[in-house]
Image (cartoon, rainbow, N blue to C red; front, side, top):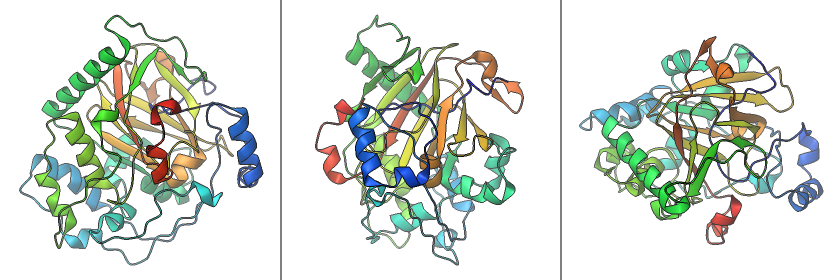
Length: 355
């Protein structure tokens, strides 16, 4: 396996492959001004994380279970922990949606989500990550296999394909390379009409999670609203969804970190059409890297330490698209990406200019 060219997820905001930069340098306002002024896209940044928490691992799997058994409800006890998690990052202006109001419990639920161990054992290769850091990785990279039903998956593929054709034309070819050199053999567009900039507020309940089965998911817009309601604080605001299609065989994404000034602490996606292998490489220590097998119909998101400290991409060469030594066929894949806004005022500006 050629480590120089492998990579890990589908994204579409301003991206850029960058050289290693120290955390201290990026923590200064002066360096950030220089970076923004000199490049149209984002520069990677290693972010510091301080964490103290006890993680509930059953909550996440119950979210997926409830999609197929709507009569079930999440128990409030699944959202309890014995310690309070704190997260800090530098520079402080990178913090997004800092409203700590949690009247509906959505912030508490989001804070204590973690990928369960059974899902991790099947879909994560953490063999190059120190065992002491596994819990942090699984807290900051959330994977929900089969989040979409087969019918919902087909609805999303149809909607994304139609959106791409309307935006780009029926006969538009795959682009050989993105303007920043990160993506190869791709098509992409924004889907602003698929989503409100604001999260859907769950209706009042003693257990906010129990309202999930009431969410309709028959259109792309309803799906975006359901995702926000299922996983994220209701006070957050959002950048317009982004659709990225990678060509079978040669479509891929080089390792990068999403533009720090274009979106907040979460990069989320739906995996449509085929499975994909995502590789994430630590910016300051390239010997620390891991891979995630993203199955078709899954929902996933990276946040906090993974979002800021790890470059991610999808291997470009078919022979490098491997998980635990097995090549995963590179079929045509569509990802629908969601990113929270760095600041509520950003969404009202011009999100389409961030591509």
